[in-house]
Image (cartoon, rainbow, N blue to C red; front, side, top):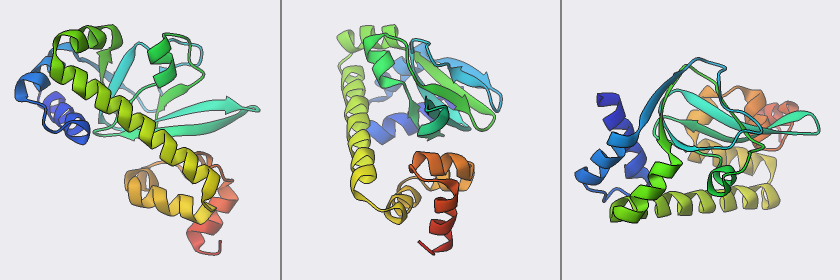
Length: 193
């Protein structure tokens, strides 16, 4: 139970630190723990996403296939939220895959339960809105980075914003996330680009 409380605090504090102890306990009462082995799929392509996921331990990545290759969309680790937002909101099958890069413990927040809570608990409604706002802003920053920044600038932004990814994720996935080849990433890391 201590890990669940720590995870809720980390997730809530990153989006809505003002949430009361009561609001946090409501979240705690509806979360479902799931233990995952390294390399395990949490979400499969074609599956409809039914949960918002709080990461307690470990690292996961979301990716999709483009021209037969995996393209990393997102990394999540302790204190992060993982969700296939389009699938979750539309309740339609996703094109994304979510897999563990390490042995992981996650807490699943059922989407239908979350929606019911947003209708009855103001703090949960605010938390949900702030999660969506954060996701939208993060997507815009990432899209702008891909459009306007050099490979070195994209790498430096990732290093500054998400140092855990640099430390823990395989370089091929980092390169894919930054929309560059592993060779280009090696040159960027070596300072020759």
